[in-house]
Image (cartoon, rainbow, N blue to C red; front, side, top):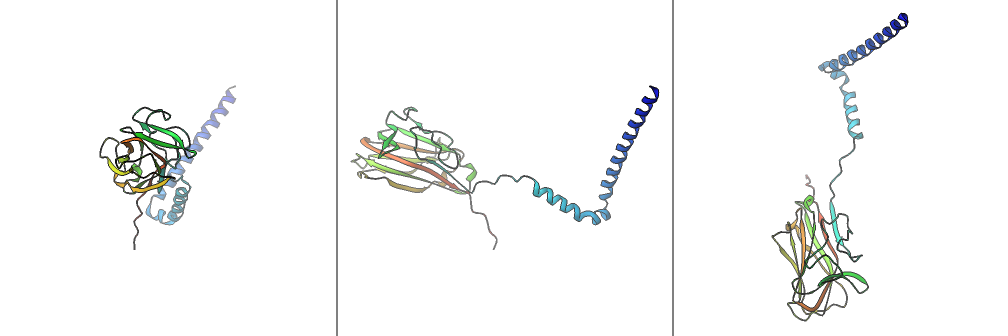
Amino acid sequence: HDVSTAIIGLKTYMQEEDAMKSNRYWNKGFFDWLRPERRARTGGGMVLLVMALLLLAPASPALAASDTWPDEFNRQVYGNQDGSAPWKTDWIDSQGQDPTSGDIQVLTDQGQFRLRFTQDGANATRAADLSSFSGGSASLGFDYRRTGVDNVNDLVIIEVSPTGTGSWTTVASIGGTINDGSYQSGGPYNITSSIGANTTLRFTASSLEGGQVFFDNIQISASAPAANTVD
């Protein structure tokens, strides 16, 4: 029993000695490499090793050069997400969040769901985060159709704000005395000055008693600033 214990103790001692020698050799080699003359002889290989490690490292995700936030109203809801970037909020209806009742609704017009406004005073807002495009550009576009309007004041007023709480800018007023047989294209309107973390659209019905304005394919588009070039 004593002999076996001695043999085991000797093996453990030798393994520990080997480990210590290995550490001393590595440390010696490392600190030896730090000497200027040693780096001069081996630096090229080390540079290649570092470059290889950098190439193998996972790349950081690049910021998108552009994004779109469309609502194509494919479903009778206030929360469609149809673009390359998600809307920050659903449509917020000032009369409640039911898209099938009230002066603002998602209704079928000419065979497809559209966002319909009628009467006076009701509004709908929706926000998107455009903060990653600060210094770039942004625009708003949509399709619309007017029916039953008969006065220059029969309008839907479209505004945009960088915060959703103030600094509203009127983008367009859709209405008047013209009734459309088919959908018209509105925009693109420049909303670059309203780029922010809570860029908000606001559509407000004004004096639409008896008239209706339908909207479809409401879309915000944003692009990053162009890269500087050196001649």
